[in-house]
Length: 493
Image (cartoon, rainbow, N blue to C red; front, side, top):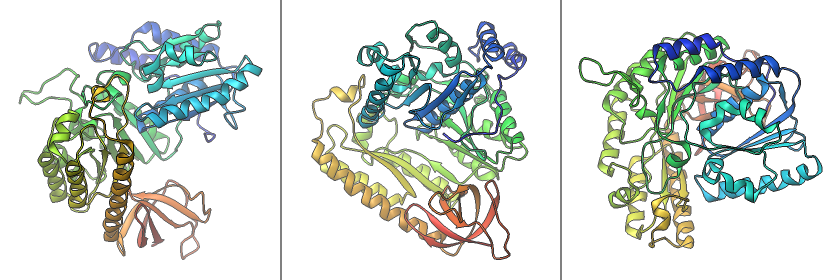
């Protein structure tokens, strides 16, 4: 992880207390834990050693890792130069695919060898594998000190105090997620993740997420706005609201408007944070077709800061497979969402997720997925071959698809996705676009790299024709000169 000049502290307890007083039903947090975090912040400032966090999986895991890093730095840890020099090593894990889970055990094997030579090293497995495996992880890797599920991220400092008493700690019980009381150690100084809703209430037959991340828990809009305001004060230009199903935001919060419409929805949240000064761009992910409404599309089209990029997983182009998956929509419903978006925002970027080789998928059903990808013309699709996961219904079905067939189907789908992405990117050629510069190109230090509002990765020179040197964090106008399937090259105007 990169070093950071930011100072981290525990958020003012009185702010959290005020939120609890005003919204006692919505926030699951008690003053005992605030006191514990205050004590940690006040007594643990002395050097604790160095830490390293390796993150596997989705944006939610990346956001969790930033929060854990913020907690560790608030109690005196400093980031290590490498994971093999760290005094405390955290693997924040993903169990959505079997290969991601197996990679974790490979990493752990190397660390356990270190620990046998240095018993003071603290090994932590966090995230979805930790939640899924629980105590069995300690039997498989007895060198572990802490096994911690995603619902316990904000308790990391408190759990480490237990570890230091010589205990092996397991924190995987079902738990209401405490409101964020730490300032995350952000990987970027420009773009920030902001959790809006934790957990998932869906019951997709292939997905392990509900069992490892728990039920939906929406953060209060006031708390989210407070976090965004802090980011704005630190110079952040873009935020991304995160949730397993971001458009389900607010369903668990109290309050109904007189019209009978829910008071807390994603559209309300977008409107509520839109006026925050210095934040130039707002994104959100990941959307679920079941909850994606025309009202949401209208608000996104009307609010200037909301970017024209929508990530809406479709998973399959066949209605029978979607039904077996338990997705709660059909292909026609998905098409109508995309048509509505393109009617209001013709140049919007549409990305999605797709699974091939789901149990029982026939050749014709697979061809329906190819047909949908061809028909819609996605800007990008995250693809995967179906991977049976523990505690999911589909893993136990007898009609599993042969692995060789999965590989062939995935390869063919990937080729089509790349072809369509290149075709879609051709619309940028010669166009003037605004990019937010996120970093210097690691492969070419003379180039900057940023993203268009539609989330297209774009490279441009660092120095313009007048000799002005531009830097990370700037919004630049560029002309697109070259297009590839998954990135663009541009000239500074």
